[in-house]
Length: 141
Image (cartoon, rainbow, N blue to C red; front, side):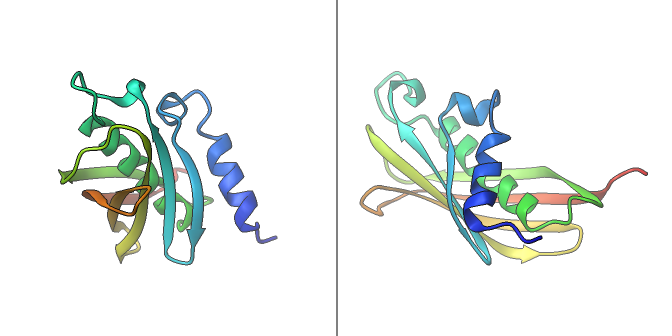
């Protein structure tokens, strides 16, 4: 049985309970054939001391959406996914509202995956550009 888009997003958000994603209020909101989008509210909870979005929170958002994208597009009956490396270039500050992270694949190999993750604000201004590499390893039988 193929799950609907809504069911996949609901399942992704359900497994985020009691994790960093729940702590940061990260929510998966859209996905398609080759992308996944998550959003996170920008509140004092994710600010650095001077009142703008913390780069670490942005990186956590990027890694969350990228890792979930790798999970969605991997055969989880036979493989599990782990992150290998993340980089983040922060370009603009945000004080409030939501930021959106869209993960798309640059490489979707059998073993390794490379994702481009663009973080934007509600006006579609580019906030950060991130790259995440993941690896799919076989489950032990």
